Image 1 (tube, rainbow, N blue to C red):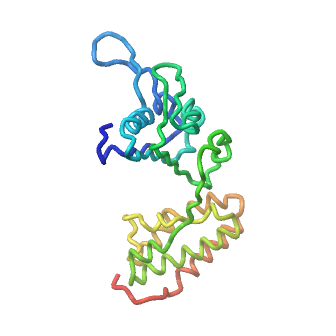
Image 2 (tube, rainbow, N blue to C red):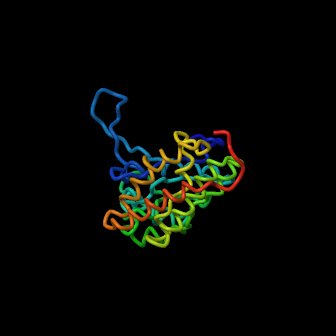
Image 3 (cartoon, rainbow, N blue to C red):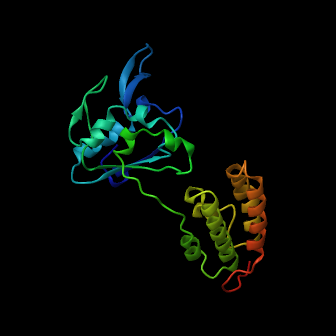
Length: 237
C-alpha cells in the first residue's frame, strides 16, 4: 500500500474460509513464469504493518468486519503476540519476522447476538477493548426531520426494541440500519409495511422460533404500533 491518505486504512471481512495465509502471509503460486513455483506473499495485515512502520508519524487503521465469523485465533496466529507487545518482533513460520507498530489501529466489528461470539477465546478477547454500540434511531429522525412517515417508523421500531429488550435482551434489538435501506425509503408510508414483511418479521421468526406465543404477541403489537398516527407534521408522501 502506498503511504498516501487513501492508503492509511483498509477494510476487510472475516468469513469461515478466511485463513492465516490470507491475512498475515503465506506461500502463493508465482504466475509470472510458465513453471510451477511458489513465493512468500504478504497478506493485508502484514502489508499494513509494514506501511505503518515506514510512516511512524501517521496512524494507520485496519477495520475487520465480522471479526467473529472466521476463526480469529487461527487467522491471527503469531500476530496476537505482536498485537499485545507493540514494536517487538515475532518469528513467523516463513519469511521475515512480524512487528506491529504502535501507530497501527485494529478495529473489529461483530453482531453481538451472533452465537459464534461465545466461541472466541480469551487470548483474543483480552487484546481488544469491547464497546457496545446500541441502535441510534435519532439518526433517522435527523435525516428525515419533518416526515410523519419516517417518524411513525422510528416510533414503531423503538417500541419493538423495548419489547425485545424485555423479552430477549438488548442484543436482539433492531438496529437503525434497517431504516437506512434505500430500497425502503422511510419517508414513504408503504415502506414500513414492506420493511416488516421482508426484513423484520423473518428476523423475529428466527429469534422466537420456540416461542410461538411471543411471536404472535409481537406481530399483534406491531400492527397496533404502526396503526397509531405518528407525532409530528404531516408529510406529503
